[in-house]
Length: 109
Length: 114
Image (cartoon, rainbow over all chains, first blue to last red; front, side, top):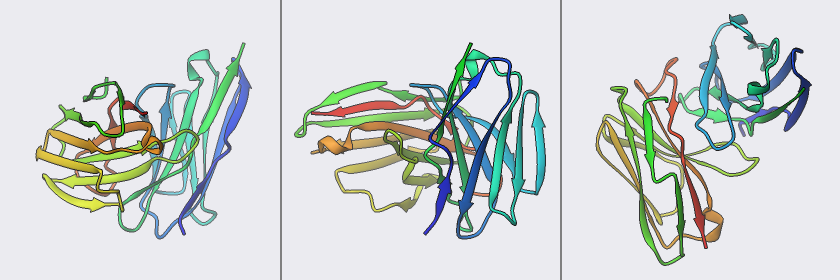
């Protein structure tokens, strides 16, 4: 079966750095997405990785290792507004998105 | 504001009611999706439409009936639902079905079935 694993919940301090991991086992691989979802709102696109390595976008970076079936989302200089759920999703060989259950990130002052 | 709107935002219905959820995208996309999101579970893909044609139905019970009259509008007709169908229903769209196409989501309809 296809599976995406990510921690259920993480806590971090305002101003700090946090890394949210995602491991996957899918039928084929055609890219990995990270989305942010604030409570009661739509998931919004953060990043897309299809090649190994690090993609940086301001305070957010996403890393991919296809050989290890592993990705992480790195958030720097955490702000209170970063409190949200972070969803990892992998596009399989049929171009269907397989979703993780999401990681709820709690930022404390 | 993602360019995808959904109405209503909240819906409470009895098991014998019939209701419809509406989704509209203003992005000029060709693919539209219905997802179910339950607490602490992964997003479940329900239906996919590409150029108005249904391309996927992930074993969804017949009490959920989608309709896509054009590439900008998507409906989910609900009939004789069960309490376990209570969830957040998300609509999404993408340029096409595949590649690096990013899906853009609406805010969802929070459905409660009594």
